[in-house]
Image (cartoon, rainbow, N blue to C red; front, side, top):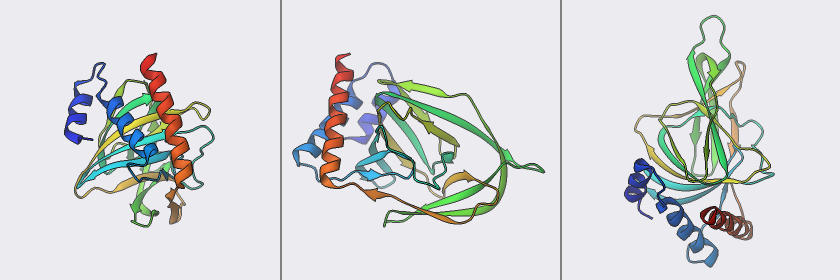
Amino acid sequence: MDYDELEQALAEGGATLAPRVSASAALEEIVSGKRQLRAVRHPLGFLCLPLLREGPRGICVHLFEPGTRAEPGAAPMHAHSWELRSHVLYGRVANLPVRVRDGGSSPTHRVFEVHSGPDGIDEIRPTSWLVRSEPGPQLVSSGGESYTLEAGEFHATVVAPERPAATLVLGLSLPGRVDLSLGPLDGRPARTTRKLCDTGQTERTVRRALRRIHAEQRA
């Protein structure tokens, strides 16, 4: 899986098959046992398959499965420390942009820093930054479409809980940046955990994803 080739394919847009072909090939390696990989249960309610890590660059597949819920305490409105380019493999994914400005005399949220450790634990630390947030209209992307998010851009990802979806995600970490989230004004430090799925659950989920990708290609 080549980061540069996928980045170029997504930047060019159009009806390119490269993202689906690359994702399908990587998922086939998982179910065949050629690639030893277990899905990560993300606190925001999706499964992550980390396929590539090259310094500041990474490629993942995110699987939004019916019945998968966000972990209590996970803040849906967040901003990445990395640039994101995402391609919807199947289903529909909505991004809700969130405009954030200094709260003045009537703040609505406190900004929190999210520090992820190698043990899968995210430390959520309150800052002194109080803001007002104003969600914008949802931007919906369907299978075969791509979208980008700049580092530091607050947003929330919305997927209908009863409808599966999957995205191929390219990320480029930027130096000096920290992951952020919006929480309550009186919020306290908290932790969330990124748990590994077992091998059997990973394989079953990946097989379902492959069937849906193939169905999307035939549609």
